[in-house]
Image (tube, rainbow, N blue to C red):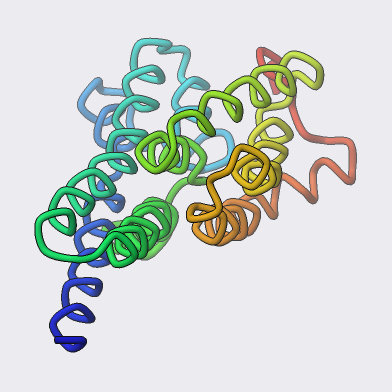
Length: 208
């Protein structure tokens, strides 16, 4: 029986990674005739870089799709394990799916294991894991962005505080996935951290 559960957990992770690996930002910008999004700005495939093309609608679509690919596998896995598995197994499977979806976005095999920063996908995963925590984190993100005007600062601050928010709000089951996701997002922001230390990180709306 444990072997069956292990295989189901592995499948949950692989499914989430596959869905997370779809590079929507790149696909949308190419379909709109804007070329390869990786050739401008930070070289990321995420919404912030899509916004640098000047197309706000594409950036908004990228946010929604990247968030959806984080939320969908968590929801699907939760439904499957609700039918065949204990509550503990369901929680574990959803945590694995959340982390795998973010990892798939950041290291997509379709782009030689390069990708985006993972924040929007992490937000979608958190929405499916614990939506009240997501609402508080959204407020933290908005407040930090308003104060700093720097997208990377607001993203990193939010993922770092997310596990603490989950603990404070009584969602201990999502703490370990949020810690793992925070580690992934911070690794993907290593170039941003370097620019912040040098005082070179651009602010939102600022032309480089």
